Length: 266
Image (cartoon, rainbow, N blue to C red):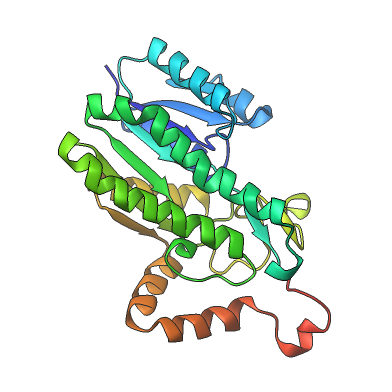
């Protein structure tokens, strides 16, 4: 019987690409996502169960978990991939937008870990959290996103110690920029946005390339999986000199004084 992976944010970008690679390696995938044509299309993919689910809605998440258990003999991997970002300075950010980012990126993942934790203990499976370079480094103009990813890493690093005795692994992946939601309609100048949609990305990876790196790290049971050249360099530079990292990040992300007169970069 094929092992089962549950992937939030499974209908697009990295989630969809990683699901495809898992199926190539003999997995059955359950793709959780908000309703839409991308999720509908997954209904026709072999070895896939496409479920409409808002992970911030306890009722929907509970119902999805019960449906998966009724159709699959085990749940062996849970991938915490769903996320949103907020682009723009903190001073102009509405508090409700800040909370929304945390609700999806952090509390949604925590709710999933609570819902599927007993299943992973039974299968001695794996939690795989998709964090970000912003989970261990600062990132200007994305304070809510960086804060939520720092919290996500703290949660899963701590959960790792609790679950080790039960044979459950907690792995954390840290992609740099992934070009998952490009296009004029998905790249707002300021405000809530889908990850991967910003026009100020640096050395962005295609989702398929990122998914291949992610799978190699998962297969090797690496507790920390940097994805992309920027992620690897960021991890190294930030460990050696946080001050240097901050300088490089600000020079890349923040507008120059000349551009600042015209507003934030976009």
